Image (cartoon, one colour):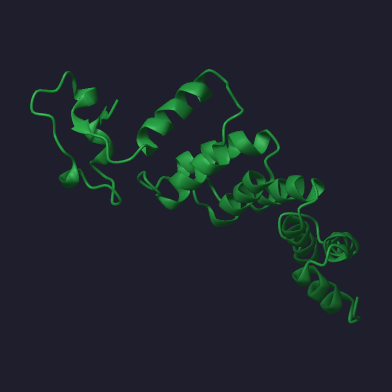
Length: 178
């Protein structure tokens, strides 16, 4: 079906309502314009599946659409909802995104401890950038108790895989080349 709701486009910057082809005699208000993008219909399908607890969708990508306003009106709260769904299913990128949201206060109330917890989940699954962030949080005492030995351990894990920021952090922490 190439028809959709005109209301979807009312606040969209990417797909302004002025560019919609309006149907003169629509069957309903839900089918009153020609579709400009598949994004809104895809989000309807995702919402339906979320409500039915069908968790095997690409929730992280939908969260990114809301976070960046790609094809939808930017909405940090909606982004967090989708990131959380993916993160709770073990999606590393979504766990890091949740950490970022709790750091920045975008879509949630800023909370350093909650941010740390999400970064730690990603680090425990082997993500080098998350390992580096966890190390830096331990080093700074941000969201976690300051613990230089724990910082060294997390930096070392990421450095073993050649993660440059972790190698530099170890160098700064120890005053030695790794």
